Image (cartoon, rainbow, N blue to C red):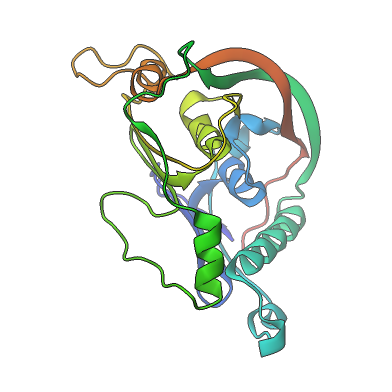
Length: 254
């Protein structure tokens, strides 16, 4: 672990083959966000330097995790979860990081149907994909994964600057993927069940969802959700899981 003196704003955080997690030019706050899988606004407290100092970390899992016997082989998801737990231990050791979970009532958004008749917008469609059934069939060897499409994700979500595209995704998952763009937790209160295909295009607002860019024909997030999906975001308050930072100290570099 060492401090990154580059002065650059961009960074990366990812797992590598061989049981490694490599972090480049990340603040401690962003490392915590990734390791605990929370949104930035769910992190409370901590000294100011956790938002400013940037760090490089190269963490490797012990051989006992990497070299599993065939009968003990884990799924990729299980291995990634163990790597993240390893990172939590490392942060507690190197940064003297102490955190705790709390629930706090905070402003959130509820996504609801916008029209009294419940009619969908043109970019919200019920999906013909049953992703859970397909995944089980692939696991049994009764089906093969379809070829990847450059146009849309398969059984998942693809996000970009001002775009969210889903294929075969539940509405609760779509709501969760709206959170980074709204700066709040988004709760699904549509009452809709079943998987959906969604294509949402909006003007990203770095200061939060506002009025969009009048120089383009692309609306703000709030307007796009209503016009394109037939849904809307309502401001409400609800209990939210937050991660409270009780203490953190700058580490000695290695």
